[in-house]
Length: 303
Image 1 (cartoon, rainbow, N blue to C red):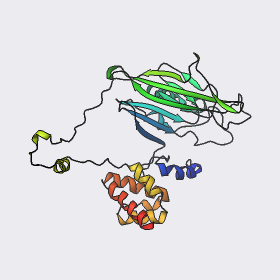
Image 2: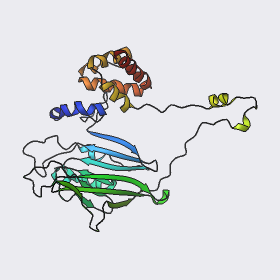
Image 3: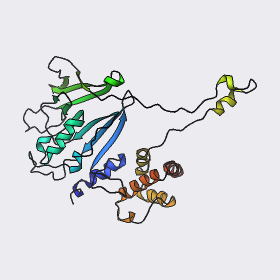
Image 4: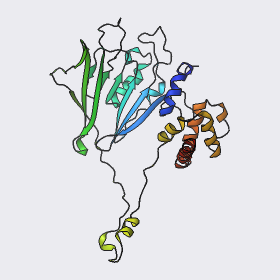
C-alpha cells in the first residue's frame, strides 16, 4: 500500500536497477538504491538513494515525512569506501530523523538533499551537505531563485593520510543567465576536503605472460601473442538488466523461459519485477553471459 503511489516511478527506475520497495528476496528489491563508482585511487564512492516520499501529499510539512528505518543501519564504515547519500527531504522534514541523521553525519562524507533550495552549501568538519538548486522552484517559495550545482570528487594524499577533495560549482539565475556563486572567500569553484581513513589498494594477481627470454628462438610472434591469456571484463547484472528491460514483455518472458530462469512464485510479480528477478537469478547461477547473448541474439533476429 505504501509503495503503490510510486509504482510508475519504479517501472521507470527498474530499467536502471534503481527501483525501491519492501525487501523482496526474489527480486533483490530494497527500500533504497545504491551504486558504486571507482574514485581516482581505485577506492569506492558508494552512492545511496533513500526514499522520503512514502507518505508525501499536499499536506507535506516539517517533521511529518519518513524514511525506511533501515536507512539508519545500512550505511556502515568500510575500508576503501566513501559514502555519499541522497534524500529528497532534509532531516528537519523527517519525523524519524534522529537515528538516520546521527548515522549519516558520522559515516557519510557528502549529503545531497532537495526540497529546500536556500543555504545551498553547509560545511562541516566531517562532511559537506549540499542542497539542490531547483531549475524550476515554486515562485511562492521564499528567496525564489533557480539554480544548480556541479560536484567533482577525488582522493588526494598518501594511503595513510588520504583526503576527499570536493570541488563544487554553485550556479544561480541572475537576469537571463546563470552565474557562479563563490564561497565565503571568493573562490569559484568551492574547494572543500575531509579526512579519509587509511587504505591501500589490494594487490591484484596478474596472469603470467611468457617473457621473450623463455620463448624458443624459432617461435613466431603470433604464437607468443596467442600464449598471452586474454580475460574478458565481467558483465554486470545492471548491464544485462538494462538490455532486457528494453525488450517487450512478451520477448522478455520467452527468453527467460527458454533459459529456465523463472521459478515458482514468479507469477505473483509485476512484469518488470519478473524480468529483474530472472536477471539476478542468472547472476547467482553464473549465467549472466548466457542471458546477455540470448538477448543479443533475439535483438539481432528482430532486426
